[in-house]
Length: 113
Image 1 (tube, one colour):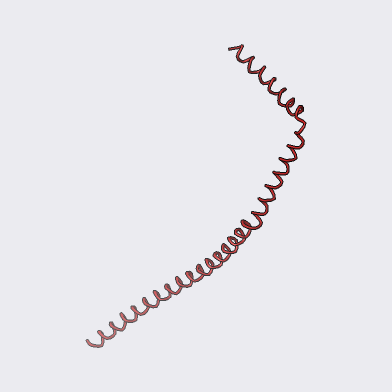
Image 2 (spheres, helix red, strand yellow; image 1 turned 45 degrees about the vertical axis):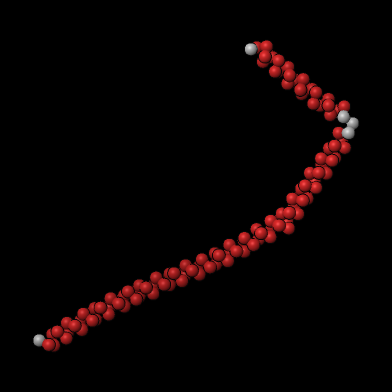
């Protein structure tokens, strides 16, 4: 078990030494790095343009629609509150009418006696 552990530690050092050596021995590594850098810049530019041209207008549209929805919800809430007040007034007036009709019937019955 101890030998296996020492072997893995030794392999890590060999691996750490061979990776930098392979970059040093490669004369085209700077060209490859430039190619990778150019590729990354091109991809980033494509992503920025896609965001600017496609996603950003959709996000703005969503914001506008959300604001319109919020305004409509505020108006709807005000209308609902007004409807509830009117319903309470109608309920009160119907109660008053019933009391008046009850009083009128009582008066009429008193008169008939």
